Length: 315
Image 1 (cartoon, rainbow, N blue to C red):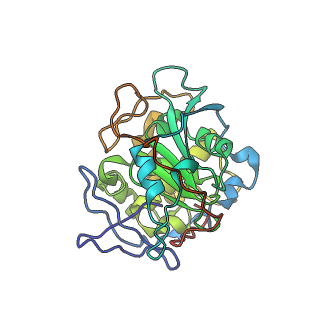
Image 2 (image 1 turned 120 degrees about the horizontal axis):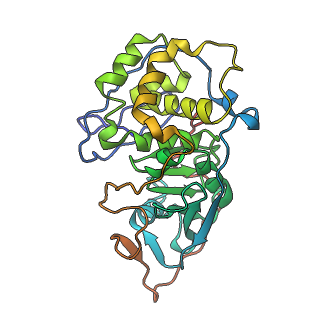
């Protein structure tokens, strides 16, 4: 799920029952195309992609190393300190419960700094599940994810990205990792999904991957990218009894754009963030928040959903 804002700054509703959010305008961001694609769908949803575990792309082994307490990337700190709701000013995660990990993957033995995973200790999603989930994303596509932040809440699962980092409350579907990573690969104002090439492909096709993709071109691209990841790196998606040719132009357009980033044997790289920092580089990077060692920590919040709950259909 990616957040949207209109030119006037008013959040636009996506589908009934999903709460829209505003998206800060990123450098180079063009106006997001806000339109229901009104296409047929190949699948009702992406449950078919994960119903058989053997269909999921192979998990690349990752190893997490915990940071010393009291130091937090600005992005994670800001997300943790957001209010639970308009009527509950408590933070989504207290600092004493915010864990930060460097994560390395076996398919990136050199040439890239560790990924950063931030996790509230009462998160439904375990650290290992988070590491494994990101391990199903090819290394090139994974490289464009700056931070992964998981916390308690959002009901049965969900999440959203801000262009280079992904956030999750609850326990999302396994396809969520690919979906949000694809948003991070649709960088510089989600320019590709709102560009001429991909929108011409949408217009030339009669269907999109699933009902969720019909929300707008940006969500469609994230679903198309997820479909490609599962189709290329998992088992070819030939078990649905349906012909994916109805979205063939979108598949070709997205695959040409993502290129080697879809290759599970591809290369890793350090991706710049919108806040001017680069993944890793703890010796030179900016925007690390350090807690006052004399300030008392708060107590852990109860295990309850956020006041601003979002219920997403499987992703």
